[in-house]
Length: 265
Length: 335
Image (cartoon, rainbow over all chains, first blue to last red; front, top):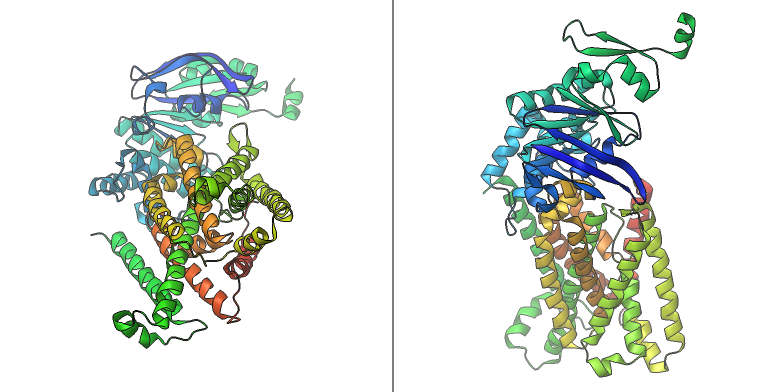
């Protein structure tokens, strides 16, 4: 579905990503992980055409993404940022209906019944329908993130890209958001790429992980293949203990403070 | 018909009513007192009388010009506030009005209207506005990212520079030109040239219609430029076109009526309080409300110390300035 082919990109003269290559199959839930400054957000910006590539190409369903029209691309790929805020207040329903903009014709000023139905379905899926008439500014961080995902779903995308959707959320909302993402992936056949900082969440929810380090791909594979203590210590330069989650059998990472480490060694 | 559309039509209906009432009030008020009840008989059988001439040769063109200029400045304000996601941005605070005024003053100094005709005046206002908006935008942009914090300060600085250059032009102008520039610069709807009034009306209608085609895109800009791009908006192209449109509206308004500040700030702000931030209704209501607001301010300006007349820019400046300061102190707004 998505092929990132030998891309190099960055800001001004600085290269943030070098020679990145990977392929993502349809229907997968992929996580991008890596330390701060490793190029995760830059990679997302390249995949969503915010950032121009210096070298290489990105293909979506066999077509170079640079050749898509703006609206056409937005009908295929939706993006959920860390925090989305409206400059002027609007209701959740109005906010979600913005996701129908890529489908709006030049002289179509009002939403069609179809647009309203799609937005309603997106709100049902994300459990935001109950506060459709509330203002976006009145929502908590977790509720707002669900509304942002609803807006992205209203775009009826085939690929959903999320940039740290659980940042600034408490554990309840982190689980709620990622459970929703996985449900969308499994039940609605939506391919998902999500950037996550929390390695345990990435391990628990993603089928495959791309570990970035200093602008390069360090490792691609299943959570079991990527999240070993050797790899984490090498990339994050910190001591960890990796155990197996007794329920999901996925790896989970325990951190070790310098003080505790000194006691053992 | 859904509820939203009914509510929008309701607002349009109410504001149209307000506009008609304000227009009728303005028509009947002035140093030559013509009671409201005499207006209809005058329209029907008063042709040729002095009162008829006062109503239709003096007051009505002012009302039409007030409607056109007020609408143009308000629509320009809505466009700029929508693009920059900042409620304090408008043609005056961004220095666009100052740039347009400088363009018109240069036209006057170089006597370009003798070569290019009367239409060279709005054209030079438009060019001045475009130049300023491009300068303000490029000075506030770092590495392709617009720094809203610097935008208003840059606009104010550019406005100061424009004012200084206008003073320079005034200091080297002839006495007759100087008198004209001073009165024009303070803002007045007393425009004897019907061609300019017609041009202004045309530009206002055109500006509203074209801006309406961008209403959905402005709604997307409400989420920020990057988010708008994710929603399929060609942000760079849209910004360029909207800059040109805002410059055209401001440039023409300034060249015909002088520098009338804060209309583009006050009106969209009030309209947003009533109809919300959706540009599909905000643009229309701001156009109607802007027209009514400026007609009302002009009526005050010409009656408050009657038979003398205040420049309308003084009234809008006082009202708008107070609201600007109030808004600034109430909300945390990026400068």
